[in-house]
Image 1 (cartoon, helix red, strand yellow):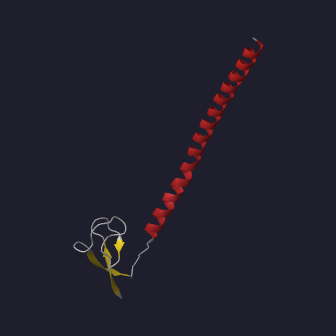
Image 2: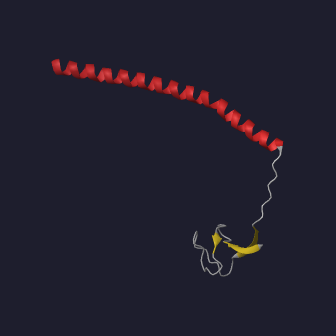
Image 3: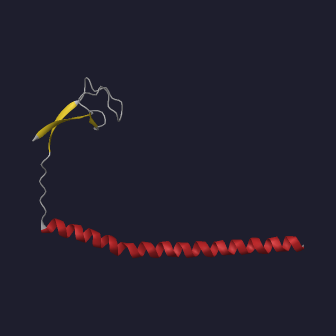
Length: 100
């Protein structure tokens, strides 16, 4: 069961077979459209090695997450300490100016 699908030769977007211009990029389709047969049957072979690689990649990502969280948490603590110091200086400065 094959059906013909047209693609824009400029940007690769799917286009109507009756269309004159690509709806994505505006390219002229009358002289340059390409027709590629599309086979709707796709065969996928899954092996244990493929599944293992996927699980290993996920495991590495999960292990990396705590270090990122620690760095972000450390940054936030430093940021809020500096913010607290700046606000304290501003508050004390405004009190000195008011009484001065």
